[in-house]
Length: 108
Image 1 (cartoon, rainbow, N blue to C red):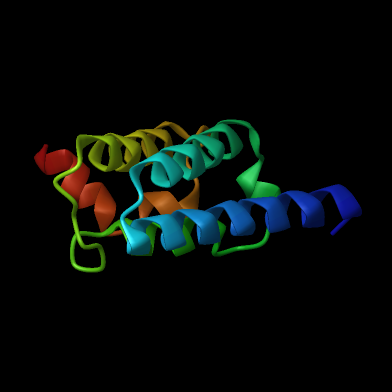
Image 2 (image 1 turned 30 degrees about the vertical axis):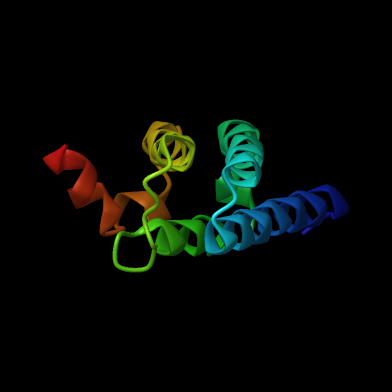
C-alpha cells in the first residue's frame, strides 16, 4: 500500500472513532460533523483499494442493536445520511452488499 492509501485509511478510521465517541456521549453537533466527514470520505475514497473492514467498522456501530438511539433528530439524520451513502457507493463494495444492514434498508 502506498503512503496516500495508508493516510486515507487512517483518516477514515479517525473519523469513525470521532463518530463513535460522539454517539456514545450523545453530542448532536459532534455526531453531525463526524458523519459529514465520513459521508465525504465514503463518496470520494476508492474503498476497493483500501484495507478491508473500514466500512464494516462503522456499519456495525450503527446497527440498532449496537446503537442507543437518541430522540434528537440531528443524530437520527446524521445516521440516515451514512446509511444512504453506504447504499450509493459505486461500484458496490462487498462489505456493504453482504452486510445485515442492507436488509434493514429494504424494509424502509
